[in-house]
Image 1 (tube, rainbow, N blue to C red):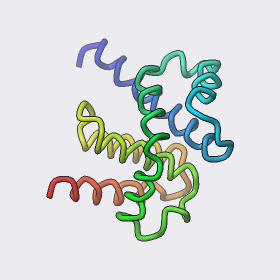
Image 2: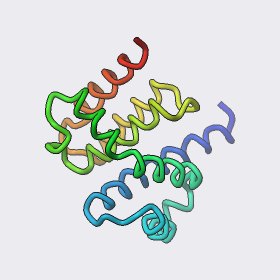
Image 3: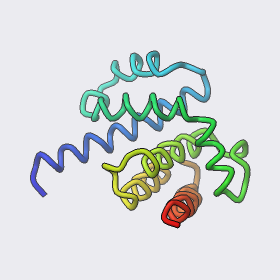
Length: 142
């Protein structure tokens, strides 16, 4: 893999990390995409993130929250309302990438979500995230 591609992948991973935090914050505060973007632009890690990806996914996820929550309900063994805000944010990103981002391979979307859950989520949430996103992926291929 060339250095430019590797740097791009790291920048996208940083964008996902910022997205988890922004979507968590949105759930707690109700801040809109513009306010969240402004706040994250002031943080050092954001300077190294894929900012266009952050902006695009943040706006899309916030616009599609109800549909994403319905998908979580469809594929989860427990209701969406029982999820903690971090796991919900990670699932929103993963489901969005699976359905709306053809530039992100399905396995990459799932793997990135699992890694986010390991880093930011509650204990063992990565198993739940993996199972739910895999069920969503399989449902799309039928």
